[in-house]
Length: 588
Image (cartoon, rainbow, N blue to C red):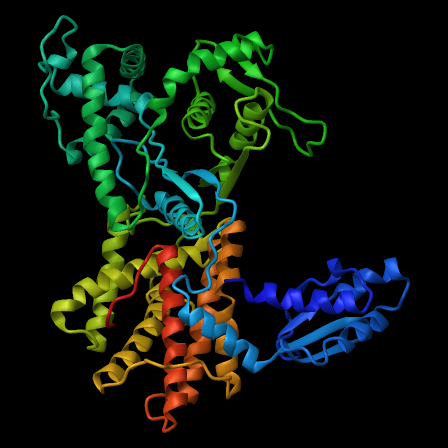
C-alpha cells in the first residue's frame, strides 16, 4: 500500500507536468502551519530560476490544474509562491478504508532489503547491568525491531566485554581466596568441574574487590596482568575458569535483558575477534598501512578536510598488546566474513565518537570493508537525574538496572491500585507492563544524541507525553470495542465514511501517516520520531473521543464507521509500540 504522501506527490507532479513545469519540483510536505493548510509545496520557489518567472505566477499556473483534483478539496497559491493544499475528506476516507483492510496497516516492506549488523549491548561480564547500559539496549532494540518490521535482515549483537584485564583481576582474586582449586595447578591434566566455583552474586563482589586492590597494590596488579596474559595465551586452567565466568555472567545478563524485553541474535564478545587479529595486523604491515612509532604499531587516519585533530589509530601497544580499537577492527573482519552486511551500526555513548571515527577510517583505508558498506555511529547522550547529573542511587552510587526497573514497577503498582482500575490479582502484572512502557518511552521519546532527565514522577504519569498515556489511549479504545461486542455488535459490513467533523479528519490524517512515520524513523535511526507520531495520534483520538458519543450514535452506519476507525487506530498504535519494544495491557 502506497504512502499517503506518495499519492499526494503523484497528484501534484501531474499538475506540474500539465502546467508545463518539471515534476521534480512537485515535492509536497506536511504543512508547518496546520492552521492554514494540511500540506504545502514550495516547488514554485525552486523553479523560478529555470523558468524565469515569478514564483507566484508558477504557483497559480499549477493550482489551476488542481481545481478539479479528486485528492484536494482546496489548493491555493499564496505569495511569494507557496502552494497550500487541503485534502478531500472522501479521498482521505478511502485511504483509511484501505488501511483498515490491510493486514500490514499500510506499512510497505522495503523493495531492497539490507543486512544490518547492529551492536547495541556492550556489557562487561562479571559486572551487573546498571542504568548506563539502558540507553544502548533500548535504542538499539527499537531500531532492530523497526528494521525487521520493514523487511530488513537485522542482526543484533550484544558484543560482550570478556577479554580484558577484568578477567585477570577475577582470576587473581579467586586464586587468593581458593588456591586449592585445580584451575591454578599448572600440572593438572584431569577434567575441570562442570559447575562454576562461584555464584553470580559472588562474582559481582569479586570484581570490584580485585579492581580496588589493583589500584592500591602494585604487586597485585602485576599478578592480574600476568594472569590476563596467560589466559590470552591459552593457559588451560584459566581458560576453563574464563568459560565459567562467561556462562554465569551471560545467564544473569539474559535474565536482566529479558526484563527489558531486549533480545540479541548473537552473544559474541571481544574474545571471538581474537583469532582474526594476527592476520589482520600482518596484512596492515604487508600493505604498508601500519608502521611503528615509539614501539607501537599505528595507522594514520587523518584527512585533509578535518576541522579538528584526528590522532593515528593505534593497532598494537609497544608491548605487543591489542587495544579496544584492535578488537573492534577484528570484529569488523569477522562480521564481514560471516554476514557481508550492507551496514554495521553501533549504538554507543556519544563520548566514544573519536574512537569510532578512527576505527571506521582505519577499516576503510585498509580495505576491511567494501567501499559500499556503511559504518554508522549512533552516539547517545547521558541519562541524568533531576539534578542534571548522571543518574545515581540515593547513596550516590551507580544504580543497578534491576533496581531501577523494580522502583518503576512499584510506582506503577501504587498508581494502579490507587485508581482501582484493575483487580488486585492483575495489578502486579499490569504494573510491570506499564512500568516498562514508562522506562522505554521515557528514553525513546528523547532524541538519542541528547542528554535527558529521567524523571520517575513524570514518566509514570497517565497524562502528558508518556508511555502510560499512550497505553491508556489503547486501553480506552479496547474498552469501547469490547463494550460494543458485549452488546452484540459486530463490524461486519462496516465502511469508513467521509469525515464528518474536524477532529475526525485530524484523526484520519494522522492515522494515514503511519507508514511514512515508521519508515522515516528507521531511515533516520530516530525512534523519537515514531514516539512523536503516536503521541500526536493519541491526542487526536482523545480529542475525537471527547467530542463524539460513539457508542450512543443513532446512525448505525456512522457508528460502525467510527468504530472501524478506532479499531484501525488501535492496530497502528499497538504495531508502533511493539516496534518500540513494549506492549499494552487489557486494562489499566
